[in-house]
Image (cartoon, rainbow, N blue to C red; front, side, top):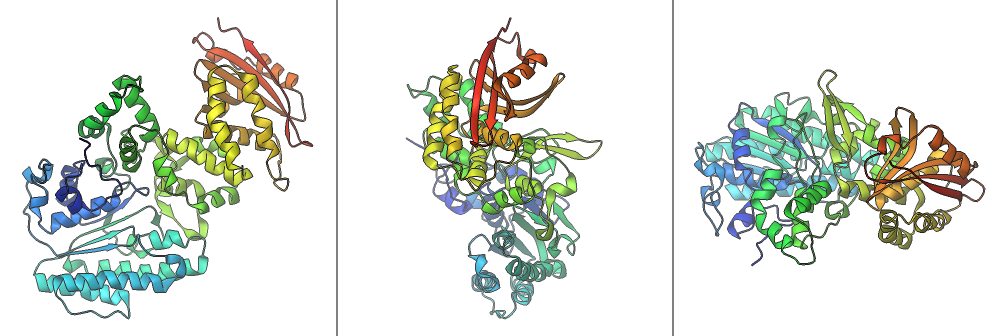
Length: 532
C-alpha cells in the first residue's frame, strides 16, 4: 500500500490528522523557540517548506499537543518528549502568498484586512477597523493579548510576495513597499505584547523597515544551526522514505543498486546549502514528486515557474552565463535586495537557482554554483529560450537524441543536429561574436543534461568547452570565421586534453568554425587522440 505523500500540502494539522508522511523537524523548531531570540527571519526558495514550518509553529504555540503525539497511525514527534510547557498562546498568522498584487495597493490592503478580520473573529474581539492596516494590526496585537491574557505570536509567511510580484512595476512596488514598511514596523512598537515573531520569504529587501527598525530580529537564513529547518537531509531521506526507495528499486525495469540510485537522486535534487558549513539538503517538492511518480527524474520544482524578471535581469546586466558557476559573494550581499539596484546574481541565489558551494572564512566570501542537475539543465533551457527563442520541437529533439549520440561516440550524428538549431534563431537576434556562439552551445549541452564546462582553466591555457558523456570526453575549440583545422591545432599545441589522459576515457578534440555571414556552424572536424 502506497503511503500518503504531502505533495503541495502545507497545513501541519491536515498532514498529522490525515496520516501523511511528515519529516520530523520539531527538534529543530524546539531549538529555535527555546533559545534567546524572540523575532526571526528565514529566507528560503519557493516550495521549500516555509509554509509548513509556519503552520507547525502555529499549532505548537496554540498548545495542540495531540497533533505532536501518536496520531492517525503516525509516530509521536520529537518535541513531544522535550521540555515544553504546551501553553496556549494567541497566534496571529498572515499568509501573503495569495493575491494578485500586480493590481496594486488595494489588493494588499484587502488581503491584510481579511487576515486580521479572521483573527478578530477567532479570538472574539471587536473589529479593529479596516481603514489603516497598520493601525488595525497594532490594535489587534494589543487586543488579543489583553483578551487571552497571554502574549501573542505573530507569524507572517511569504512577507515579500507583494514586493516580488511588483518588482517590474516600479510605481506599484514603491507604493506597496511603503505600506509594508508601516505594517511591519508595528512589530517593533508592539514588543511588550509579543511572545515571538517569525517572518519568512525568498528575499531580504533592504528597504523594508522590519530589518532596520526592528533591530532585534535574528536572521537565521545563513545560520549553520538552522540549515536544515526547511528541506530534507540525506539522513532524513534514507530514514523517512525507505519504503518509497525500496518500491522504486523493486521495479524490474530499474537495473540500479541502492547506492547507485541514491547517488543519482542526490545529484538531481540535493545540493542546496544555506550556511558556511558543507551540509546540504534536498528540495522537498522535487523529491516528493519524484517518489510519487515512481522514480521519474523530472524537473518538478523548476516546472512550477521561473520568474521572467530573472531572465530579464541577466540580460540587462550582461551577466556572463559561462561564469555563473564561478560567482563569489560576501555575507551581506547574499541576503539583501534593493529594487532600485537589483543584483541578478544575488537574486539567483535567493531564489534557489544558485547555491553556496564553498566558503572562505578569511574574506567571509561564499562561492556559488547550480545546486543540482535539475536546476542546471532546466535553467539552461530557460536561458536558451530567453537568448534565441528556440522552437520547442527542436529543443525536444535535442534532449532525446544529443546525449545518446555523444554517450555513444557518434560525433557526426551529434554535430549534424546543431546547424538546424542555429538556423531557427530569428534573424533580428544579433550573433555578436565567438563568445555568443560558445554560450549557445554551452546552454544546449547543459539543457540536455550533459556534464559540460566552459572556459576551463588548466596549466596550458583555457579550454573553450569540455563535454563528458559516458566513456567519452570531448574538447571543443571554437573559431569565428576561422577554420576547423586552426581550432584543432590550438588543442594539439596546448595539449588541452593532457589532464584527462590515462583515465580510461576515449578522448576527442573537436574544432568548430562559426560562419558569421551564414550565422551558423561553418565547418567542424574531430579527431580521436591516444589515451595511453
